[in-house]
Figure 1 (cartoon, one colour):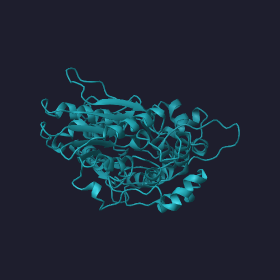
Figure 2 (spheres, one colour):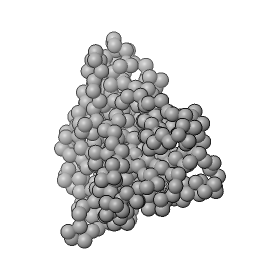
Figure 3 (cartoon, one colour):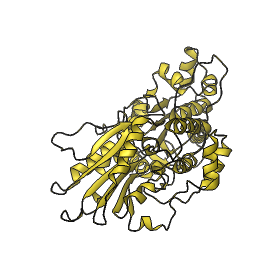
Figure 4 (cartoon, rainbow, N blue to C red):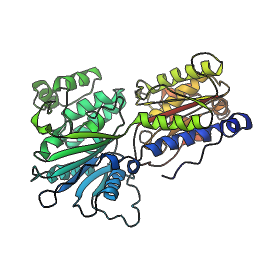
Length: 451
């Protein structure tokens, strides 16, 4: 990804009329740039093993997997043996820099619903752990999206059953911790099982966080991290969200047959996890860029969860109060937040056009509705991986005239919210944020400019 254009001074932004949405897009670019693997990996790389005794095997999964693999290839000593396999999302492998030798194989698979390519990659990754010794090093590259990309169903579950459960989870409104708890217990490779397969080798996990709280056991369902959740927890999630599963799945969870390795297990002895990029770091980078131009900048939190549209309404209330000179924030300012919201897909009457859109777009729908055309407020929400759900946009943007322009086109925000159709609302307005894959993933980025 190219470096962002230098930001225009706040005086020009506020008084001369630079496009505020361009300014917010520049802040998004700053946030993404802060999370790129090549900028963050060097300080976290372990010492290579003695080549006369051991080898370095690289395994990994996630939307940032291709970029993480290239960063390791660029930074790893050229005279130190290096090989391995990493799986990333279709279209998310960055162009290979000229002259960089390929020592780590990168393959692509489906996200957010797993496919046969992801299953094959997981089988190959597990097979590569055979024959490891205590003199070997396994470098695991883990980032968000790995839960779907690294799919290896538990014994007795077909890929089709796993796909169906995944689709139900995505539409249920379950948060990421709940979804990944269930995914761990229906897998032969997640929830610490990959680490167990690597024994007795030393395992170092480099991870980019896309989850609230930066818990490495949740990121990509923690394939190399001990799991404190239980089969009983997974069963409770099935029941809470009315996820339909075959009887044998429910029976296995009830019996504890698919329990994961727990904290304190000897399989994790000597293992380390190193967080190389987090949502908070990206928000701080964007805040610093705004402050450098004379704007006030406030970070609400990097752990915001909840229904996307409702989170949008709360943000709108803060922006409206700030625009009116009320509340704790002083304008002109930028208000930033991150985290991972959810979208509960609502059943629609027969014949209703299928809605399109993801978390960031639905946040913007709720925000626009609640802002009520408030003057002096602009906003942008986008996923830092460049893809909002399964569409081709990263997110969307909102301006004071968004609802007026929509009305001219005969669109009502309420109707689009009802059918979860953010894409269908913002595309005719020209207000989709389209970046293409960014090759990193620190989850949601939201920014509101209030002048």
